[in-house]
Amino acid sequence: MGFEANSLQGVALLLWATEPDAPHRLVTPFMHAAAAAAMDMPVELYFTARSVHLLVPGVAQALRASERTERTVYDAMRDAAEHGAVFYACAEALRAQGLAGQPLIAECAGHGGTVQFMARAADPAWRTLVF
Image (cartoon, rainbow, N blue to C red; front, side):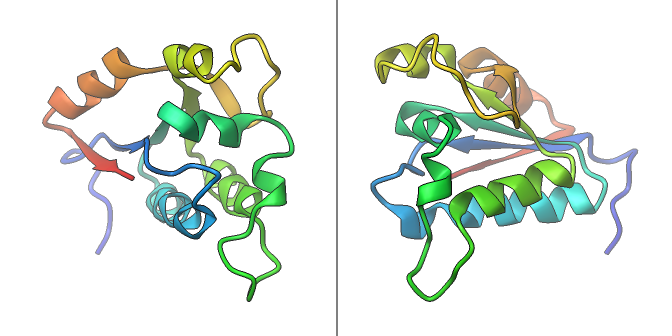
């Protein structure tokens, strides 16, 4: 099952129900992103709502999806980024969460929100997932 560059341009993931208060839900989107990126697909992750807290240094590093693993949520995020996934923070969500102007983790490429994600969703060459 190989990736055919001429049939698919990429995968965009919208993170809105993935928030620090529910760490058991946090690793799955990053595993999907890492898998797609490892298959040489362009991958973009859009952090919105409370998921923007994961981009604040120290937050994801302090979370684990289960007490049965030593790996942190940040480890899963870093895996996705190292495979080539690009992280975008919604500027409006940052403002709404009181995080505007705060430093974000190095893996965050910048701001991207509703318009950028909807452009991906409207493009038939892109696939979208919502977590």
